[in-house]
Image (cartoon, rainbow, N blue to C red; front, top):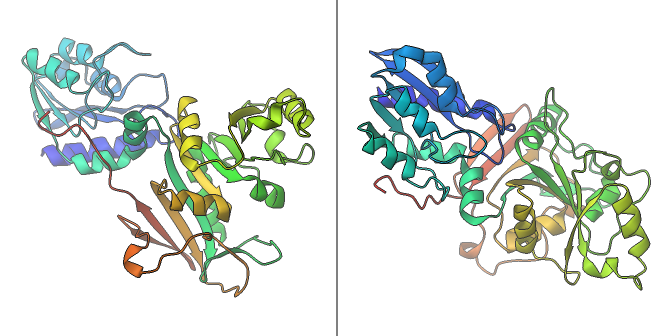
Length: 372
């Protein structure tokens, strides 16, 4: 029965996708005498936690009931009061937790407080599924770096564009529609400046009630166009250029472009030199509270991310088309032996009409074990 109700709590949790970052996805269910008397999920950042919705719905029936929650209840004051206080006040008898919270502000304290209050606590029910739905949160809270998710559309022979630069459209309409949901799910979307110049992408989420991501362009030599560029047309202060600090100096030919872009509301991440590692970019984005990034290209940036082994997961959309020549989605490195190549983990295959997508993600490291 614990598994059954935790499955429901997990289904509720994922309803918060794209709305709660950088908070985790959490679902909660209250059960009394075999009857579900309350349920809820974390709906938006800064709003009530899942336990609050579930306990409020249960009301007096929470007395002596079991609470199922996908992540350890919080024990600290943040934007909302500690959930453990409400759980105690509502006289929950038993609390079943899928996984402990890696946040140092919680980190087993919620479990301990509940146990000290005489509440039976069970940890580890459907833990792997709970880790999976919160892979972004676990990566960010444990490392301070955003979760990096690759999105790529390729032909059967691995090309992302013709030799003349044409890339519209490799995949079908349903595949492209799914990408809009990915853009809504992740906090930032990142491309290289060549992609920006060639494709002039909007880098937004075109779904109803969607949330536009931060738009991030890697542009060491500050070649971002000042006119006829969708990237600089937004007025939401969510466009970010990663460039060299050299471009801000008065004797540099790009200083005027830098100032004009600043005047347009563009944010900058300034790094030394002109050859940036993906890792240092992720560090800076993490400092800006960007917990996840959708990497959309181009080939140089994707290749660098693979070479540095910084891609945490992804979805590669494959169309039944063959270009022969053209721009490959991976370039710049090779392996002598097959055994040394990058091997995608936890692979899932999706059929999207005449397209196939390969989803993958690295195994999630949870430093807090069930018994902690």
